[in-house]
Length: 281
Ligand SMILES: [Zn+2]
Ligand SMILES: [Zn+2]
Image 1 (cartoon, rainbow, N blue to C red):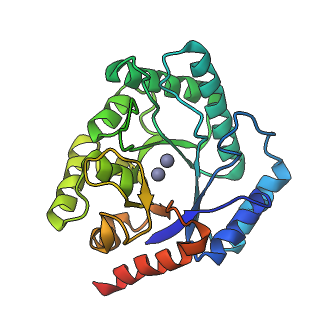
Image 2: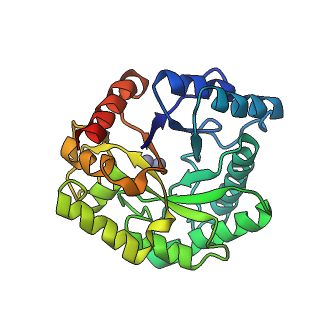
């Protein structure tokens, strides 16, 4: 299994691989800029080169990027849409410079315009950024959400509707966040529920679209639509649920990262717990 965590880029992007290795990460997720701000200095190409060298040196086999929380590709408001698209395009360019192939993002929120209109706008935005970006090996990875408020993307069917409206259906994928999926209503805790969930994923989307996972336990119950991450084993999914993931050979090459609330303080311990679930079976 390729296990890791969301790693801080404090001290510079090129420091992240070492930070990740200290936490025993095989793979990691980063923000390539401050996730709460719209603008960022362009990536320094020397820093990007160092990042790639250090990823090799510290044996981080894959890094994924999570986009800024401000971006809403589904916004019905023209100004917001333009700002979001441009910021997202910048995220793609940053990913390219860093040699990162997966850019993970929440589809967006329809803000009252309705689900169908929102999903269509997300797809239109994705078509726009893809065209502006031109060629380059950056894939757009839609993260499943818990579905609170007007947030889009809380079911496999919704994600499929976005993908169906894309001009480029190759350079796109899905990130399965265990907490979001559970809160959205998918049972990943019991053996039968877990099996059914991924059968459904395969039926609706096709398992080939599954490119990354976020491993988070859930403070909310199944179907609660609460996006509250919990430490592994301390929430409703529990070690029983994560055991399902850790013993599933289909995910061996898929980057799986923690985004649990204690962060750096407990990542190492949580990764150890996850790895013990692999060995157990
Ligand atoms: Zn996310
Ligand atoms: Zn997530």
